[in-house]
Length: 354
Image (cartoon, rainbow, N blue to C red; front, top):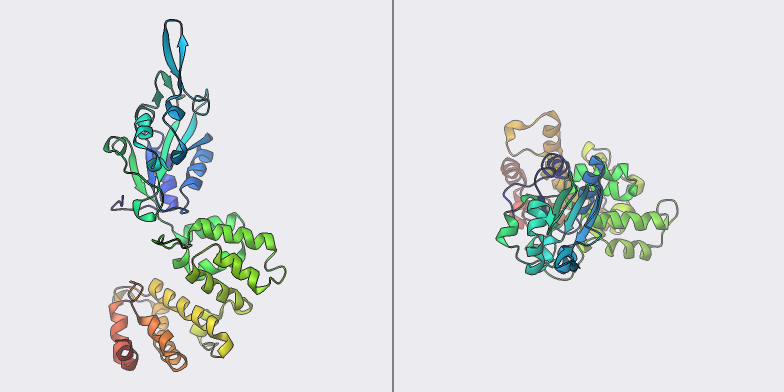
């Protein structure tokens, strides 16, 4: 499922506080984007215990329980994990990964907070979550009856909000500094094949590994650093991250190049650094140049002026990287007004790009 509107981490937290106490909420999102962590945060915020059930590992009897004879009749006894005396948050993770039979067992639990004759304690909250079909995860079609019992939201990763969280939780500075420069690398869409991809969770894993090895406090062998990076995030992002680490002695290099206090790295052994800085420059232009030229302020005007000069300088060092900055191969396009000026001032660059 893809909803027309998406929510960020902070927006989801606000929605849960307002909606979850009165209606069950289902959170759609790619694996590793932070769904479980935000549900736990919600439970902490409202002062309730969070009990998680993993849909992909459940059978119907795990929900409705087993029958027990009492006198001349029998009744279903719900499992101890669900049957509690105090209110709590019941988190149904990977809900759309369970079978149709298990989904049916959830109907009354989600809609009425009831299993047979057992009712969840007053004040309990039910929240579901699951991956999208295009994510390559284990998912099954969710029945229309189950869909109609919940309020649905789709979570996306917001780099600025994630960085705020990362700073407060002590993630490794190499990771936070890298995502600060390349916020577009926080998340990449899951591939169709068995390849690693980048998510907030995978960057967190890389951070934990770097902390464990004492990276920054001591010199790590190049091979170990490569194993950690390529074993956590996408190959493309891992290579860029390694180039970033290599130039940490001058981590403000891009800013100095834009100001005119430094030049593009041009030495043969700096090619990976040059590629990283050029990619970072393109990301900065995509993020800071407005779509409407009339919205340019003083700072953007300076950036625009310097951008054209720097792209021209870069073309003398590496024409392919200069063309990469103004290309649209990744589906992201620089503002039309800026491209018009590039065509006018740097026709050779655009001609070679065609």
